[in-house]
Length: 288
Image 1 (cartoon, rainbow, N blue to C red):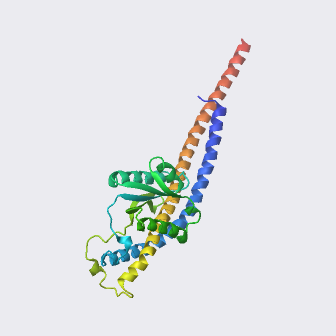
Image 2 (cartoon, rainbow, N blue to C red):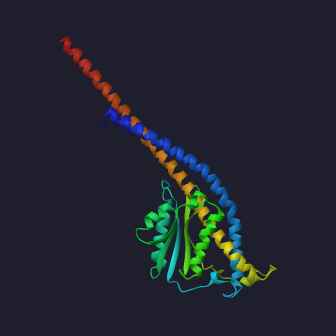
Image 3 (cartoon, rainbow, N blue to C red):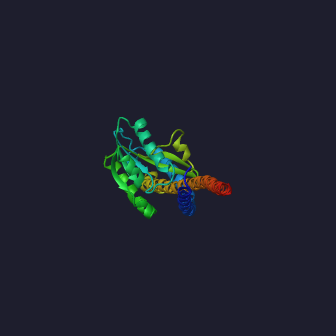
């Protein structure tokens, strides 16, 4: 059995760890509330804008709907991996790196794939096996629409100049504090409506100016909004994952502390008993 001093040192260390994990949990909980409100408010607008753009694009020919809808043979692919700059958030970052690797192996094994890394943790892991064309770790310092719009414009330029035939976003979608769902979402070219008659879908709309002008104006805005939503989703997921991870870490530290306290009390009681036996034995020896 370990000596009492060693057990006391371990208990002190675990208590310090508990204070840290508990504080991190509370900080993440406070940040999560703001991030959750932001993504919840944004989703309806983003979904409706994307739906409208897809429906309109489906009724136009490829020339009228612009270069962003042009379907090309896929030989060069860019995956935008959205992770965090910090760890201690459970499987949040590893789920994205695994999704990237799985996407490459299952969908693009015959294509040339590059990585656009948003977040330090993803870049550190993926750079060991894949080519990282750009790393943006600063976006989370000031997460605004204007800052993410600059990244979206960069991605659009990559597609327009032919650097890549397809661009996809890989990020964690926020469901709740305990659940984050890895998503692989097509960014460019714009994905057409699947099934149904797009003309019928739009029959209730009167367009002013023309559909072509509306589509060309909406495409950049829609793409910027799509990227901003993905990063916002990931940001909320990060805080949810960290809050859950720190909650579990605090609970585990509490259990370990309780076990060590029980071990300490047993060791202390055994030591006291031995001392009493030695005293009684010595007294009996003096009597004899």
